[in-house]
Image: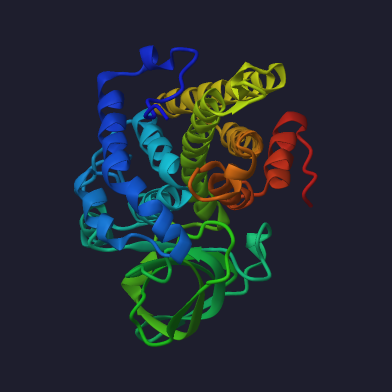
Length: 388
């Protein structure tokens, strides 16, 4: 097959700045030379290639969208392009970087004290310190406001009790942003993962996102100092602000997975012959390729427009919900159709569409299900809240 050079039928490339292209190209080179060779063995084993974490730090991937504290400070579109390239390799790469950057580091950068920023962010940007974001609970997914994790004041600071579920990076994190109710209000706390009473249990039986470290988190009388509270957090909205940053990265990332699937389908059907001619010469195959290319182009344009709005300070939460659910749905359908075009070869891990499809089943669900984002968008359109 021809090497991947991106699928850009609408010449989006012409709308990118030099900085944006440079950021993308640097990560694309990393993906080709270092990330992709690790994907198949790590996906099979259900592990993340920890040896690549320092390299990702060197490239400025972690917290790339943040200013100062050792972060690259690139613009929203450049950050999105980085996420797109990472997810072309595997959703596990993008998820790892997104949780580190858009969730954990963003929470500290947005809601922490200057002392907290100086203490944590430089090491996190370099990949020396890994972070996680503990919001979801086993019984409270979409209804995060009903969380049961509690914090209470103590003579030395605070004591946390509760449990979190489906927490990406928790099993390898050194610091976890834990969301808990303190006197009835949701607040964020920085919890050292090595403290007594903190325990994680990795979820091993996943059929999707196998490269991603996903864990249950247990907090049993965990004592933290007064400086563990993120003082800028004010209710569940603070956590949702971080989630919107992560959802933005998802809207870009899934374009990478979809592009990889479509590229594979095009190349395979041009080479594979049946009835004496290439599969790509058949009308029904070309129809599927054309539909996938159209869907991918729409997703790419939507992601780009979000980036431009974000840079202008005009990005609204409804825009993010539209892109998160719309782009992940499009990417999942592209992955499924690409797998179909590969026939029996498509069910092996020699070719990426089925792996991407399995990953995208999760990506389409986490950080807000399709239904939740449709209801968020519906509320914006009508002014009526259908959730409660």
